[in-house]
Image 1: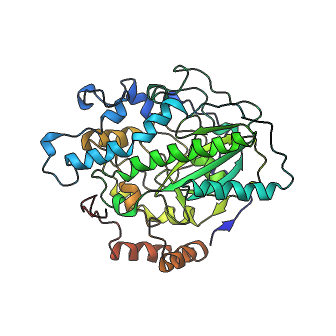
Image 2: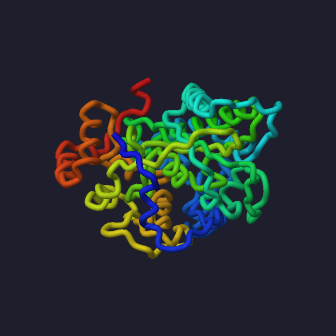
Image 3: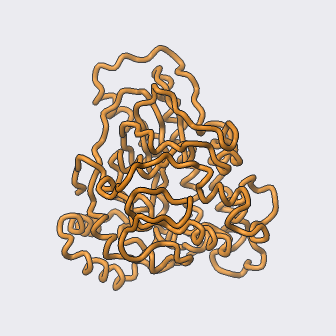
Length: 384
């Protein structure tokens, strides 16, 4: 059971004034404009305007290597279908409300309806927070624009003043597909397309009620701190959101709106204390991109935010491994002890991690003993 807290758990690690992050400094944008990875490592072709996404191209020289077959990559590209359409047409854009606003006498009732509707559309978790504009990107970067969002690279991002709330949605990634990583794991791509359906659909629902709503995936603003503000989880050593039910095995999207809603409180899952002693993600990272030891204030490059104590991910090492691997990697998700199926046993252990942290080293040891972190390379289509 999560502890409800007054302030998000990252706040005690802020040591200076936070600055809005420039999306041009995102590692994907830097790769897309020709930095970080040599051009010979990026396949040619028209599969995507983004150099980052062209990395994930089938390599016939590895056709006999398990997890890298033509079928594996076909599943990956198919899973992305809706995501690409939505980026070109819906994300980062706002349609005007379609009618006068519906009067709302009971904000809690509207909040309950909004969350129920989001889950009906396919959301697994829904949280609501006041919009903290420090998490909004300062400018559009190469990656968003090359994948089809409106505007130009370098244009400033200023959300209209009437946006007061952010709705953050998490969708679960398939547990068994994630176990395949660092081989091709198409659940990542399917997750992006689920985001691409849920966020614009819920935004349209809000617009039909007469309120402003703008859907967003990874664009426009930093999703993880907004998700933490909305009570969906905490930040882990690997730089990912850790949720109570799914651990880090989620993808995030969001909607900016002026619809009156009740805000959720941040939560404490015991993640900070556990990540301090665990280091399994750092040990297992194929690119050695995750920091061991204590949190630090320094950053590895412009792709890290500053003025907060954390375990900064080495973005260049991470994306460099992707280029060598020719597909994205979810190994840090796979090995994370919080990545478990939602069973009664695992719910009990999560409670103990939160309320009895003195046993954290024992829980980590038993996680290794039981082999939860092992890669399992089944046929991705077996379950179908």
